[in-house]
Image (tube, rainbow, N blue to C red; front, side, top):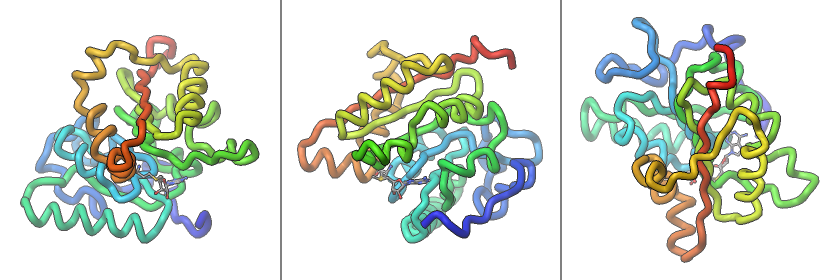
Length: 227
Ligand code: SAM
């Protein structure tokens, strides 16, 4: 399912208003220029959209985008969000979903320093060693993710696969532009942490099966970069 993606040539060729955030002027989007809206928070591999939906309320001033490679799943989330917007007029205007391969096309959609948060929730584990290059958190992609993050930006990852969690931590710890947030008080005070543990469909499934969840949160080391 990797072919036939349409994507803009450059981020400035992308108009997010009509298809994704037609009501964006109703909220006060962070990081937005006067006449255009851009996503500031990505739920990468959003699946059925539980976290995308939750983040819309938790982060009312952010513009949330779920990204999903499967067409039918993306359509499910799109209809889910439209229904929510209808149910409570004025709500969920700040959340949308897009079908794309986020391992390939992020640079076509996003400018340097435009994102405040990136979520990787229960990504496909790709257990076999020969498939490790397909993992969505990797040395190369972390450099891309750092490029898109704004000062103070954060990267969140969670999985029920211990080995994959260890991979996430090893890759992020080794990356000079990411620093783990270890302080339990800081993590507990961040509502996004609780949401990523409890609100995704995969997270709920793991809870029903009484499985373990492992997560880590990293902050972007903007102090090391000349912006
Ligand atoms: N985050 C959701 C959750 O926690 O419930 C879904 C987790 S599911 C195991 C992983 C999702 O990532 C799948 O829906 C899959 O289609 C999507 N995915 C895998 N590779 C992707 C890619 N390159 N770009 C966008 N989505 C991708």
